[in-house]
Image 1 (cartoon, rainbow, N blue to C red):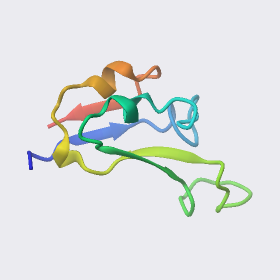
Image 2: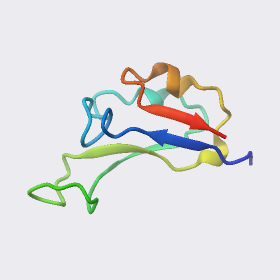
Image 3: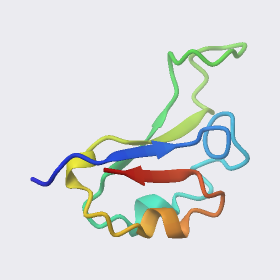
Image 4: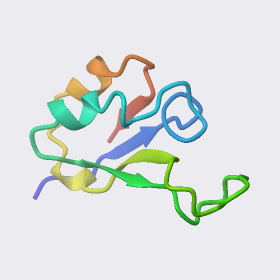
Length: 87
């Protein structure tokens, strides 16, 4: 396994609070060969909503940063420029 990389997602651009619903985009998921990201419901998050268990709110989370090859494909393909990578 490689060195852990800090991958950030700006949820004001992508996700439950963002301009894009990740279910409609998912480009980062498609271009990431080592599959660093996972798309999941935001059940139980701190976001204020009528129903905190509403399965209509989704986000993409970088779970396996140590698998990142630092190819930056996810950063390049994101239409909202919501992804940052630091190491």
